Image (tube, rainbow, N blue to C red):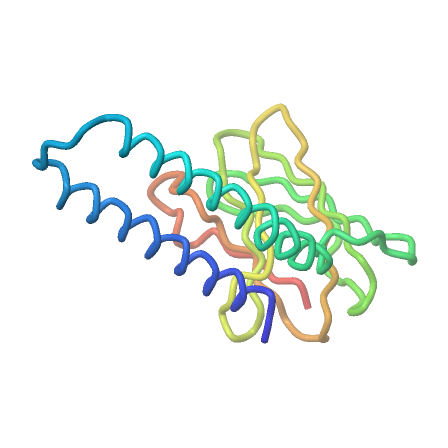
Length: 168
């Protein structure tokens, strides 16, 4: 089971639990009850919730964080300077080697652009913002050789749809 699947299942369980609590509170909202017994029950529920978080949530979080996607790369990165213009990308290097880290230094000459890297199947594999006067750094390893496309992810004007560059 992947980390994303475990995260999705745990998130769903947490959401369903919170929904059940909200529904229970809503159902009991109109009852008149003495404060002292309700307070004791609430403190008991709070203590159980706390220990569930400590005993289940903490180990689960540690287990999920073990698969950190931001590991240090051993090879020196290839550097690609990318500048967004209305309505094209200027890449100083269009050829990169698969399996080695590529450090993109992304900026814009005019307005904000979204720098999105897509694989041949059209799946977004990495992205950052291109902003005037600022250089965002994005490091990505292209696992397989192929032609990757750079598309603008933020509407930047009339010819936004033609803002495409390729990295073979």
